[in-house]
Length: 277
Image (cartoon, rainbow, N blue to C red; front, side, top):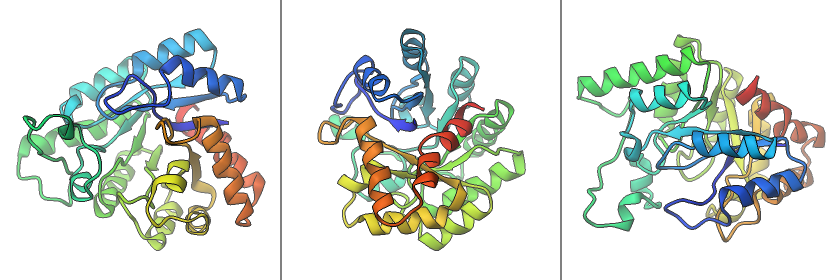
């Protein structure tokens, strides 16, 4: 299996284990690799060290939050030129995160302002910001990297997908679109998947998303079709170990009547090809 979404310490939030401990748990479970994600810093150096020491395919990337300068082409180029494969659009600093009262770096210190980030169709009056956004998308296209939508709203995700198509970006992943943020309706998820967007469902949603059920996740999985990707999004102290979390997600969806072979591919070959091929 190959997990495209996991968190580890060190981080600003508590995590179930440090990088090496999380990596060892994947190795013990027979995984081929994983994508290490952090909300406020690049994980490229950390992932490279883990890959060299473990022999697993460990991949890093960057989330375009304020700690990286927001939608910042310099940070994106640095990440991709040094081996990063995944760029997440704003997560913890997305305006949706603030509206939903989900955790943000600002929560740790009241001296930080609570500015948020957005992309069109949310109005961006700053021409420099618009220029930076275009260059970020061009860099992702030129490096054939994975564009993940982060925690942006549904309309913003749709706008990003259309921009990605115009630039020839084929590695486009809707970050847990059925989670609280962005909360995209199933019909819209099905449409975007039919047009070529990959659709992520995470084990985190099973344990921590208010109102989420296995049946609802199965509905999203059916809507995703052959673009389904299963990931853990684990690493929280109150979640299972990441490999076990992803394995449990596969089992839960199989009990909802989804084809086990298709689910296995969604947690292994499909995400691996998306990131590495």
